[in-house]
Length: 265
Image (cartoon, rainbow, N blue to C red; front, side, top):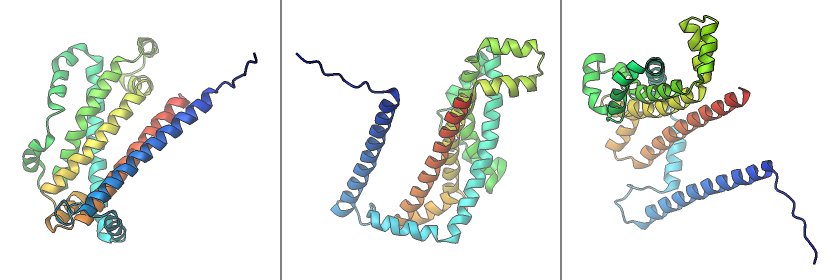
């Protein structure tokens, strides 16, 4: 009886095979969704142009990318989202660190974050209009309010996971509060901070665009609602596709940045 030797699979080859399988699965999901969309568009089951064909959407996508007005709207929305993320994310980081450091503050105030976090922020938009006006300020406030809660909750949880030895070392060197934040707290909870910002950025985009659809005369949200008002469905889907791709691209970049920084650390 002869024995056949089997070649062991290295961890690197196994990881590559798994990565290829994941990629193929994702491509299969995307392909299936596109096929179902096109089948629905060609079936005539829905009212004309409610589900336009992929070719019409792609044609409108090309026209949108050649339109200078689109880039003006994109610049407005990008500026509002960036400022909202800076304000809401910064406030969330500071609040999360305060709650994570103090057990009393966490017990007293953190439940409010969990209660208000899932609340649809659009209900506060009339108040934000009265406070910040009908201009970009109310849109930035809407995005910042949306961004604040996931960042604060993520950072508060990350603070509690910091190794107590690192904190004692920092205190033994008599670091100031600012030095503790920059040299101990933030480096030790890099992943929770960035993950919180990733989630916060996503909801800041949603909040800002939603506010633009309600009351604005510029921005991508305004452009989307205008195409809906004129029933230009192919252009509306093209704009939504651009927003989706931009959000995914930023999220992927933040994820890769987190991985690289974690590996270097």
